[in-house]
Image 1 (cartoon, helix red, strand yellow):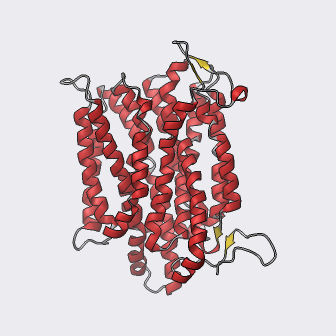
Image 2 (cartoon, rainbow, N blue to C red):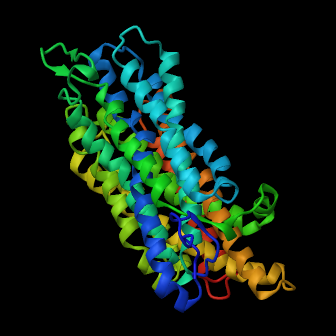
Image 3 (tube, rainbow, N blue to C red):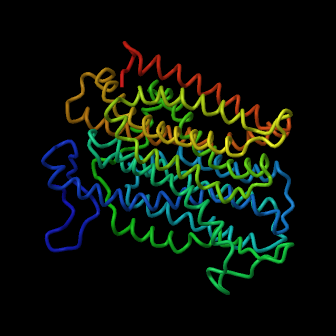
Length: 465
């Protein structure tokens, strides 16, 4: 049995006996503990995504309160959290086996208080420099980093038969933080939620007021509760301990790098589109109140991820991923048809919006399917690469490398949160329209579809899954 309590003392947070693949252990002990850790992990990851992507809404409102930054400067503010978050994910990928999932979740959640409080104070001062906002945008990357460690942690708790759905739940409902933020922030910035403690409102030219500081302050009480819940309610798995050197073995795995490409196509697209969607809509359809609709894209993507993990568990992640990329190619082509053009200067907002909703939905399906693929791939690869390992050590190696690859691929893919908004900005600066960026994304999805078919989904594939 898992040792979670001492004989006469308080509950220990270190699980010294953890055997999720043992059916009896899982049903009598493991499922309950894993479920508790999952449901503490999810809201903490949701808040991490909320803080990470908060600039996607803030930049759309900054001109209204007197910050006269150019379009390129605002795209930088929307993109920089993606750059820092993706970079931090590389390091966060290896933290759980070193520090333990409970300790690292509590620490990484508490770190989000820095950008949340910083934005709240900085946005109230009209003299705040652009450099200060750039630093705060970079600090929001702490939220992006959390995903890698959260997914690696949850991967240790579940047996293979339900790992795909557990990871889809953690990631999908965590991804929901982008939508929650894009829905909640436009509401709370219109009211004095914190009274005098929250600071004075900013007056607009039409006589109305905004409390843009609430975009940061609103997360503070929830982050404090989440930190406490993680510290007292989660667990560390003793067998999940590993040195950095042990984990770095994944850098020698060809399958790790292939999955980095594919997950960039799915999750990198989801988070990049979420970061750039409000500003892109605002620029292409200036007469539309974009914040009324912006939250729906990340909502659709997050829910489709959380709700479609079972499809890959049943039909195979490789097959689902292949068809997802084909669908994404069609969706991007549809987006291009509805943008403003010389032939149709007004464009077609509802056609554009519907095509983007389809694209968000497909990214969610692909996010779930690619993560389902990784444990299946490593279950085939480790016995091939290390045939002399004893059964127990081989299973531990499969679990350790699967968790590390899940975290590392999420780190590489997160650069989509930087490159997609930045690509929009570059394309608009060079050509006056985002079409060039979208054509590049379509071409990348075609490459991903070919890779998926060749390596994982065709008859006689190298690693069928």
